[in-house]
Amino acid sequence: MSQDFKKTKFNKLKIVLIDSKESLLENISFLKKGYGWSNNRSQNLLNKLLINNKTIKFYGVKLTNKEGIILGSLLIFYQGLTKDNIKIINMSSIYVEPNSRGIGSIYMLKQTVELLSDFVITNVTSNLAVNKILTKFGFYKGEFKNYNFNIFNFILKFNIFKIISINKLSILQNNKDFYYLNNIRYQKGDSFEVSININYKVLNLIILKCTISKNFLKETVNFNMVKILYASNINLFKDYFNEIQLYLMFKTQSFFVTTHLEIPESYKRFKSSSEQLFFSQKNIGIDYLSLGSELTFYA
Image 1 (cartoon, rainbow, N blue to C red):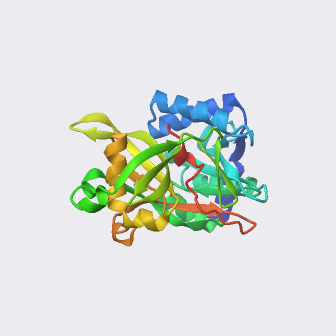
Image 2: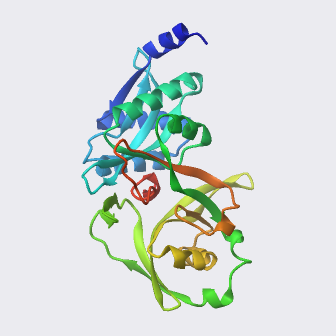
Image 3: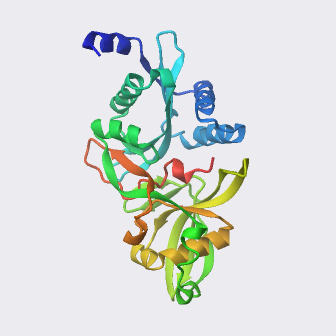
């Protein structure tokens, strides 16, 4: 492809910040068609972004042609604040219509990073192709990956003595809309904090209970799922990993569980669903990339 052709293609594209309810609604409709979202999911995203993003007053970025037709879009969640008052945002739901992929995808992501470079930017759920593009534009790989499990991954492996030592699950009350961990403020979203007793020790977890749709016997079935985003004692969490998953799935009546933090090496043989990435021009480290991100919100 010649440089002149690339330049001509880029000149026809435009990046626009989504900063109004009307524009957000238009772009969610575009993403709904692209991803096949339900009406309920689309409406939930609209409502949650309007509330959650009041601090930054924008909701995403769209890619348009010279006629203003949307060719691509991505959503932004306000994720939190560093100790130096630098805002953290989470880039999610990245979609470019098929005929504009390639150059269009690269252009949208490159321009978005340049436009929002004063923020710390995270991306925690994208596919391998998007991750490759983002790493070329200065994103770094986070410490953790996302893993998906179901009850059959644990049911035949639990230690009876360990499982009976886990008890007293309690939901911890938090009237604020954020968590404060290691000098960073993370948006709470729909997640909540629980404590469980394990062999006379207390482990606090930040989790999200949600549903996931699966095709079963040619029908779409909704299953309960729990996401584990944070553990106060990672060594205790890893030592009782198998039993904690079963205990939480039993308590939340869930068939699936996802983890977004450090897990035992023996479970890393399972294929991760996605990597966690972050961008920062000021060398700021973020311990828990999933907290406050799209993973913290039930849609």
